[in-house]
Image (cartoon, rainbow, N blue to C red; front, side, top):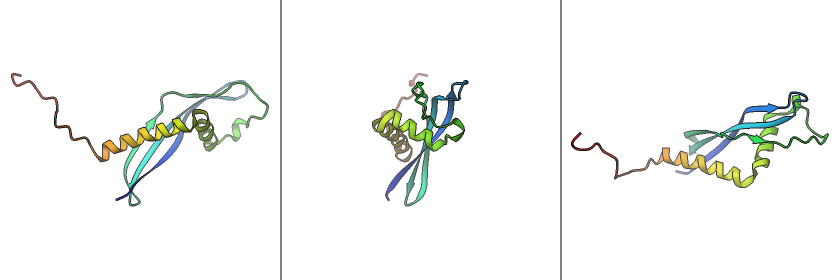
Length: 116
């Protein structure tokens, strides 16, 4: 039984400069779907709480706000945080999925006091 995980990035919020709609911040979420033999067995969604800040210096080659796609934003975010951090975020989702698929078996659990 081979388990594979796919990741979907979504933009949850944009902030922009009201004067020219230049995007200054973006928030995102990542959804991981674990599949076994092509069948989804677990889904985990992680909403990243720290927005990504973009440079506010205009170069003159910016893409017009109306033409920006979610795919553009995801690419810019991933480039901005770097491959190492993208992989860390994916591993966090993998760990959450693993805890659901293989819940820990803790033999040492907290119990009530016998005299209560």
